[in-house]
Image 1 (cartoon, rainbow, N blue to C red):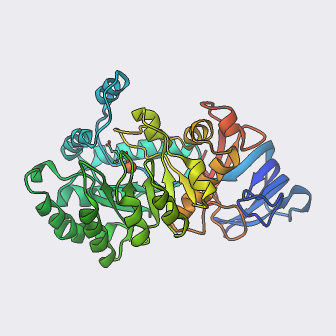
Image 2: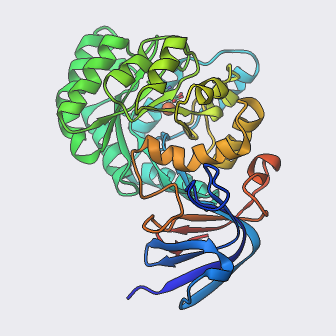
Image 3: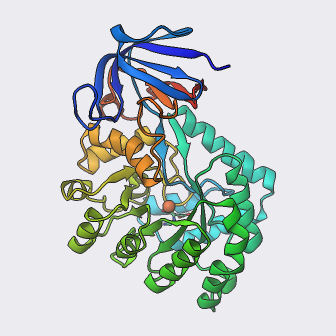
Length: 391
Ligand code: NIG
Ligand code: FE
């Protein structure tokens, strides 16, 4: 039997329902309450109107928002790349080549080591308010190693992405076409049962537009939905391909032409921005303002991986997006919650309205704005996941 709980005395509640509260995209309700029954939200509104419930939690005049939705991470890996990071901070630039270091470490690791690593970063993310996460393979690049990564990931999330096309496997360095045939053939057959999504790194040094199209099309034919690493390090065909194939998300979007921005604005494809990557590679920031002003739906995610962005913290990404990508605090919070949900084509998360999953983050602050205003401060003081308090 489920029992109901009211969280009351919330100074600022972010519902992400513009029909509530102040009518802004965040649907902000002051002096609010949320009622949870089982794993769902059943009521949101002003505290004084909250219905009677079995249990009561006093939020103490602090802020509550939907749990963060991290729609892009790479958490099945072993080892780290401290040396590469150090070299970059002394002036070397980021390339896709470093991925090979992690591939070697990941292949050498046992299932138990990989899962312990994955769990560690998931716990870390949960403590920072992330209640839904997507994660990818891409550090195995053999039939066995890619399918094992997805099998391990699927024990922890439904949002699992097959990224056999991360880079051409070093074993196929002389024959990239044969590697694409493997990724779209035997490897796809082994991986598809464990995944919801298919992804490809469309970039110089990884896969070109034709190869990326072949990968995503083969995945679609197997029932996987496309998403793509696009336009991260340079201009390229990735964003246009994403729109052409109705990808749920085009991720990175750092180097965009006006035509790319127009294509995104006239599509259902979300632009997922990953400021942790620009931070950790000292690269140019994506122009979030340009995308938002054009009407593109923007998500914010961590891209957590040992190479280009070793952070699991969406609060940190929100602070970067506000400070360096010209997003307002409201936009950044929306993008890390409702935006992430849109990038995963989910309507049951990223909002706090009746029927949504009861995924909530309680901040030790009176409003969500403090996530950007107080960067680096651990403000998350409570997390409910599927109705259960876990932090
Ligand atoms: O999203 N761009 C490709 N993949 C990752 C980086 C992976 C790595 O460097 O290990 C990214 O930034
Ligand atoms: Fe990535």
